[in-house]
Length: 303
Image 1 (cartoon, rainbow, N blue to C red):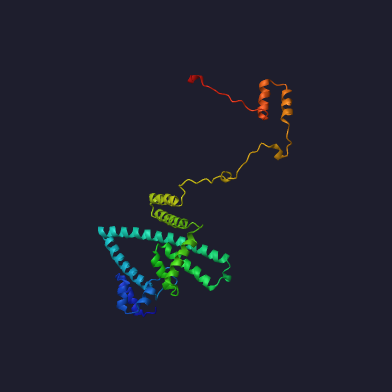
Image 2 (cartoon, rainbow, N blue to C red):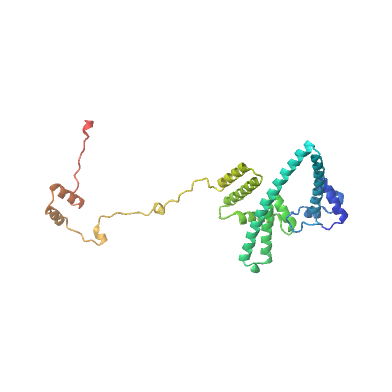
């Protein structure tokens, strides 16, 4: 959106006063949709630069805060206890913000490099302009998602950046982005586990930067639990236990190609062996020449 220098200065002035953008639109008397299309631009976008609405709005807030901080620092140096306490509070807050920015930047850098590697190995020269735009949209959504923006906000931001994208298509792009960066298999719940585990990892890094080791430890333990490392690994069932084939036992040796033996000849052969009568009977029973007699066993203790 093209604005005059006077209009940009007005945005800086009222941005420094923390006026909501809806009120600034009324003051400037410009097109509402065009203003918010420019205002909702992310500060990581290459178009975020002088002349852009959100840039000058933020610049106004920074300059105002700087004036307040300089006045507060002056009073703190003069010994004002309230100003000293506020200065320490502001220092801790800025340290935490800087640590958070470093954590997010490192994750953004890693994921962007991964995406570049994917495109490079997939021979980008063979990709169509539509496919390249699709990859750009996924990476843009991922950048907003890392900053923990909501799904409706991300969908609207995508439609502002690519007006030709419908609301349904924006939601589909959001879902594709989550699956693309966080899904390693067909079980979609695993994608969300990786999302929240990764956020816990980021929080642990942030806690370490703030020298809060106990909080960092809790984040690491929780991340491990979300990934399922605390649960016992289920051992797979051996394949042989799942083999339900029917096994049939047959005493007919002829089916195995062994010739049948005359039982009377086998009995005579056993009788001629140098064995006791009891041993001969056992051999005949095992050879199924004679049956096993039924024996009634009575426990003497029951009598």
